[in-house]
Each structure stands twice: as structure tokens, then as C-alpha cells.
Image (cartoon, rainbow, N blue to C red; front, side):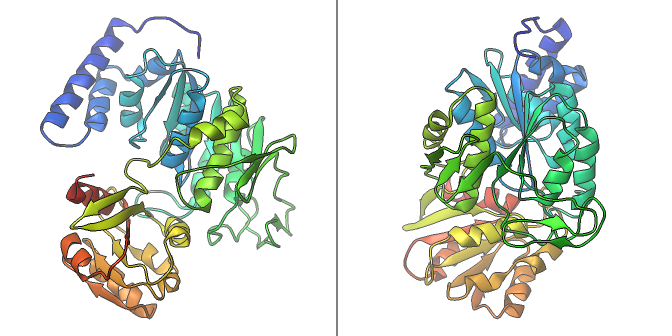
Length: 412
């Protein structure tokens, strides 16, 4: 907990030093940031290192299927108004990557940590967070992650009786069910654009009724809680009914929702909504997401979308037709090797856009677009796709490893 100034044990110091050395060697070899391998080595030397590194911090954990990297960044920016912050800003969100991030935060007061959904409970047990933000749950990496209700059940059981303040999205039934076991929950009306994973009641299995923005189960009575914070257009409504304007450089409704949840988290730490939201304006891009880059004489906007809910949100923020679009999909281990999710995405939203398709699984995507009656071209690589795209800024949408491939290619 914050305020604990006990120094690290000799073993912990050795583990931190070794982890940093391995990470530096990995970077020097051109194998990425080295945060994951460095964290693994450090945890091998001291299995309790994550808990030791979190002792002096007021920790916030952020978990969701979509939006956790951006929300983590927004919260971290807001909390800098109250003191130094350490965060895993590059998105390494499993215990090894989190350990590496916290190892750099000896002088920090706050830890703002993105956590993979599967690891949330374990990381919460190790770090004793003051706040946990739960944004959404939807299908993702079905070959690796559990089915959504199983994840919600793991959260519900693991967070039962937690001392943390849980800031949770009141519009996602799975999140509400997971958070309801916690004694101290702040509900945020952040919205839910993708509803296809929330038509059955997580409590009893009955059919959910969803009139307008409300939802309830007609069989067991499980229903949407009354939120104390809400996203309302371009404003955040606080528990006192005051409306605070959202000014972001990040595009789209989903990021306004992330800002609303972030403002609620910041308030837990005493940062007023006006201050928190003003600080969030500083965030221009998040680990390359939303960056506009120059490549082959063209402007490309890089957008990450890795599951049906994410693609739906991304389609809503791209420029209208006839803006050209490049889609890139891989199915490597970090993406999940199961591409069946492509069939859950509504590609008719791209009608009128000239489309080029690239990536390891471009043919899988081509079949899906063919069925959706979209006009597209299959290209060998980004260079060819850019050459074949008509004039204007190009929207480039890619899943996880495809996005990293693109960033390397454009030097971002």
C-alpha cells in the first residue's frame, strides 16, 4: 500500500537489476522493448516481486476486452495532477510486463496498470489496488481466452469482497454481474455499442430485455444499476449532476466513454473532473493507435481493432466514403489463431469505401468481404495497397500483430 517505505529485499533488488539487464539486451538485439522477457527473468528470481514493487503505490488496475490501453493512458495522465505515476504504457499487460513497468517506478506515488482479462484476479491479489476499472467484456481470441461469461464469473469470484473501489460500466451486463460481488462499486454509464455477447442473462441464462439504453432480465430480475457517472454526448456528468466538457485529440465515441470512466477513477484519488479531463487532452496517440503517418507520399491513419466489438467501434470513426481503407489481419499466437470472429463483423458498414486487404490471413478476410458484397482488392503488402488506393488520407485498420507489422514498416 502507498506510504509503505520498506526498501526492497536484496533478492528483489537482484531480480530488478537482472530483469533490466535482460530487457536492455533484448532491445539491443532488436527484439522489441524487452519488458516481457525482463519481467519473466525478474519473477523467476523473486516470485513475489510484483507484490513488493506495488507496496508503496496507490494502484489502479484497468481491464476490459477493448479500450484498456487507451483508458490506462488517460487515467495515468489525469493522476499526474496529484503526483508521479508509473504505468505499463506500452500495453505489456500480463504479470511479466507489469513487473517490468513497476520496476521503473521507485519514485512514483500512483501505479496505473493495464491488465489482461485472464490475469486480473491474480494481479489484484498481488498489488492490492485502491481502484479497479472494468470497461467491457466481449468475444476475443476464442482459442486462448475463456468464453465471456466464464471470464465474468472468474472476475466475480475473484473480486468478491475486494477492498478496491470498482469503477464499472453499468451498460455492460457481463461487467455489472462481475462487479456486483464487490462491496464498493461506482457505476458509469459509458455505453455499449456491441451487444451480441450480452443477450443472455449472466445470472440465470434467461433472455435479456434491452429497451433503449436500459437492460434487464425478465426471469430473475437482474437489471442495469443506476449510474452515478455518465457519458452524455460531449460531456461527462458527475454524481452531482454537473456536466464537464470532454476535449480529446483521440477520435470516436468509444474514447469519450473511456474518458468518462477515467474521470470517475481520477475522482477516487481526489482529482476533480475538470482537471482530469483537461489533462486527458494531452494524449494524442496511444502506442501508435490513431497516429497519422506519412508513407510513400500518403497520409495513413493507423487504427487498431482486434475483435468484432473493436471493429464495430472503429468503423464508426473512420472518414466517410470514398475514403480508401486498408484492412490487415494476422492470426499469430498474440492475435489468437482462430479467425472465425471475422464472420461476426458487419462489413456492410464499409460500403462505398475502396478497400485493399493485406496480412497473413488476407484470403480469410477476402472471403468474408465477398460474402458481404464489398468491393475490394487483395494486395501482397502495404506498399502495393497504398499504390492501389485512390487519392486522399487512407484509414488503415489492423489487428494486433498486423498493427505492429505496419508500425515497423512505416517507421512509427
